[in-house]
Image 1 (tube, helix red, strand yellow):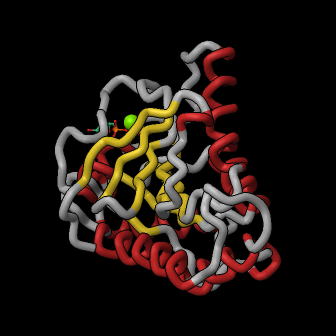
Image 2 (cartoon, protein in one colour):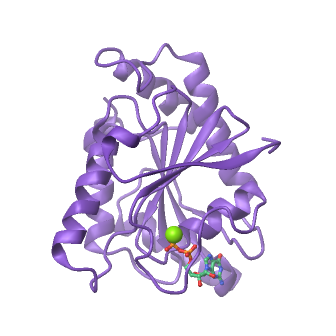
Length: 231
Ligand SMILES: Nc1nc2c(ncn2[C@@H]2O[C@H](COP(=O)(O)OP(=O)(O)O)[C@@H](O)[C@H]2O)c(=O)[nH]1
Ligand SMILES: [Mg+2]
């Protein structure tokens, strides 16, 4: 995808703030500090669009970035940041769940795990939840520039086993520093957008019905998934 224009659209602190114009949405999710904002900036070729931080836990709302005026990149609040007070954590969780439970959104969840670390129980819970909701998703490993080629391969195998990923869904390793893995990630994103165009899915402006058709179309575009998990 060629990026012509991208801009910050809205910072949603409540579900009422989510956009309802029916564009495809690509959601970036994972622990605080995993590299969500850096990856959004790198994919879009902008430096400061999504705010990056050395201090984890800064993103408190769901930020929507408009890409080419026809799709949204969605920067979800990071989870698993222990120093955030529990009531604040609950509020984030409520907002993220409200987002993920809306019919038809997102078109693709990019579930990000730091390539240097094992996924946590929270990562596993998130994946289980995405599976149970039938949300199309792909696991990627970030900060790959910190690992050698061999270490990357080992990380891919380890994470695939740990998260019980279906064959053909090996995690993509990416680096926002070197740009490694971004073409592979773009083709998954393009696939999700194409699946949306070729399906008669409900957009977030509509409600109910037809969602399984959508997910089947996205599944076909993204490659095989565990049949037991495909709705
Ligand atoms: N070496 C390396 N550092 C990264 C990469 N992506 C992000 N970082 C660093 O990790 C920290 C957290 O990044 P950020 O994008 O703010 O993470 P977020 O909390 O998930 O949005 C920052 O210090 C980034 O510079 C990467 O691909 N390689
Ligand atoms: Mg961030």
